Image (tube, rainbow, N blue to C red; front, top):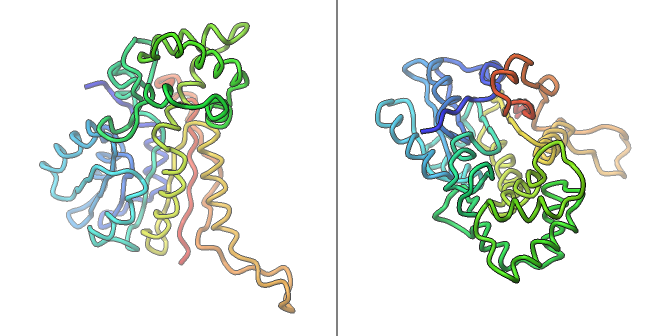
Length: 307
């Protein structure tokens, strides 16, 4: 099993404010770095619940569940968060929800999963390889305009048009079925030199599309608000600007509350929002980034449920 280093571990624990008798939900178990640290702070009455849509991550969670009576896990995406909270009897009663977005080191480093291009492997990219459409299948059928949109919107790729046209041209000759072939096509389409590998943004965009990551995030944030108890904390760690914008806007929208109807005599007043934003943006320390380079893009935001 590949080594996974949880990002912003100390900061996440501090912002969650873990109490010995508290009830917490880790929405992205991964390999259990954050989960084990939370469990270490819980007393006999405390409980930790976890979700992960990745079957290998869930297998690791089941091993922990077999050895730890205070821990319960399920294989599920963010969009199933509320239904599992209801099944566990903790809807509206959780003291903290943690969401650690992005791809874990074991996923990135395993060429069989197709998330990276350092080693050649099947072009899959699914968080759950047993569900949905693979990246190769999506690339084989997607139209040019939609491909440009995905690369531009989800990868913030400045050469989206060039890359999309190259992909469409090359798939006409032979299916694009491996990470190495896709990376080579992108590299050949991008002019000049890049700071990072020229396929980085393309792989990010296609992964987000295949897994519906932004839709899942938006659904998960709304459901997290519903399952928190008053005073419960929502802690979100994101790894690129698209995710962080969604989180920031969600927190701001629910912190501002609703303005009264325009015809009311009192103007400028708002009802209190359901969330209170705690502090500002938290970034990893220089020491953590040096120890774990994948932490460099991490951003942590925190809010507390008011009511």
